[in-house]
Image (cartoon, rainbow, N blue to C red):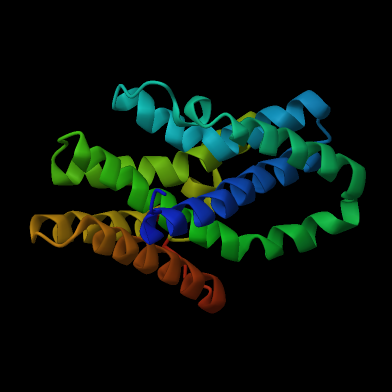
Length: 211
């Protein structure tokens, strides 16, 4: 009987929560724009898979992660169908608040995984960190663009991408010091997610550009 690595099991479990939470954020944005079911699926899909797909394109990885694990597509379709049946306008604000913690977990996980994958492909440290940021943030950017809005990652002054950069940098430093990959992944995930949660609780903001 094959022995399942506890670290991979943990990553897989949180990846499910993270992907669904990002898909849900896209679903909420599309519902607010009163899009049709096709629009709901498209916006939810780019929010959930956009960052990882861009990472795979830049790294020339095939097949894309959501094609290799096609069950993501069934989960996405199921989420959209259930949401259309159950979610009403009065639920949107409450749901958006409720997914902030899973979203923080997703930010940490996708930052760590994106950075680790880039390191495994031989990218230099700074490029690997930026690849982790892209994996974690780009889905939300596409979600907002599809909804004809200025991406919140660039305009709401929350240190979202900054925390992804710090988490990815932690993984790169630990990798350079010879720390085990599993420990580096956990550290990068934990730092990114913890900083994001603290920012939500304490209302941290990045200063706006001033003339």
